[in-house]
Amino acid sequence: MPKPLPDVLVRPLRPDERAAWEPLWQGYLTFYESQVTPQTTSVLWERLHDPQEPMFVRGAFAAGQLIGIAHYLFHRSCWTIGDYCYLQDLFVIPEARGSGAGRALIAAVEEAARAQGASRVHWLTKEDNHAARALYDKVAERSGFIQYRKLF
Image 1 (cartoon, rainbow, N blue to C red):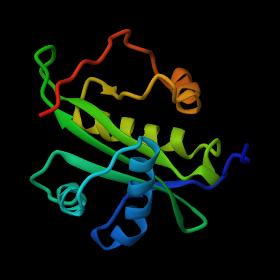
Image 2 (image 1 turned 90 degrees about the vertical axis):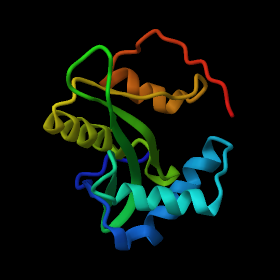
Image 3 (image 1 turned 30 degrees about the horizontal axis):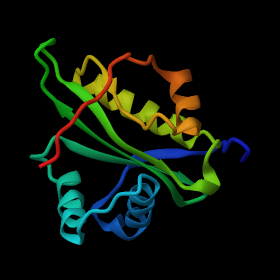
């Protein structure tokens, strides 16, 4: 297990940092045995930097290298006046897992959600993602809900 990194810096990614971001995005997709078209990746990057979109990206850096990313978005809820914040994607490069980067990214998203007036941050992971779940069980509560979906 990597040693905790004392100086993990989390900040929004800039539009000129796509070349650093894209390998982590592809690593996330590979981890989940998924793929998207290059056009989808381009549209995602544009949305993450469009001030009219409720989507955002944070990056975790150590020694100037991007080692983790978090994509999140705000959405309405029937249960609250304020929005919810959905942490849609969280990825840390394999060499930096266990270093505190994932925890720092979650904390940064939580801080952004509080600043936006959201009443919760929520996310999903696969049942067999034991490494991530070990962290998630320390920083949040499991909702007990099961996700269903229909793809079109």
